[in-house]
Length: 125
Image (cartoon, rainbow, N blue to C red; front, side, top):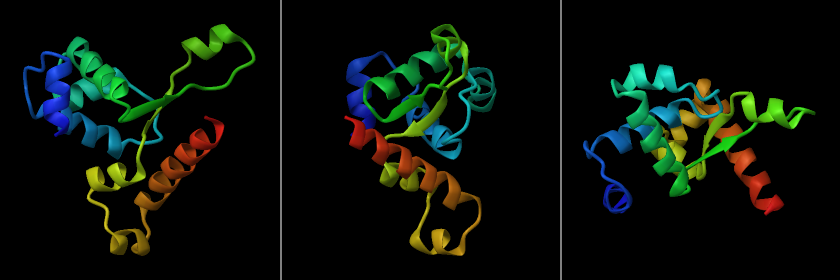
C-alpha cells in the first residue's frame, strides 16, 4: 500500500528503496539527520535520497524536529532530528515485539522518545 501511494506521487525508480529508507530512518529515530551517511548506507545518490525523504515527509510518515535556538537563522541552519509519526510504524519497521521491549536494551529509549514526541505534537495541534 505504501509503495503504491508513493509511486503515484513521484517517479520512484526502485520500488524497494522507500521501505528500506523507512527502515533505516526507523533505526535512527531520534538521531540527527545526516543525508551523507544515509546515502552511503543505502547506496543511493544524495539527490535521490533527498527526494525519497521528502516523499516520506510529504506522506506524513516521517517528521523532523528542528532544534531550538534564540536566533531564527541558527534554527534553520542547525541539523534536525528525525522521527516516525507512528510508534506502531516505528516498532514494525524495527521488528520490535513486546518481548523485545520488555527485555530492554537500546530499543526502549528510541521507541519511547519517538512515542513521547508524537504525543506532545498531538497535544500542540
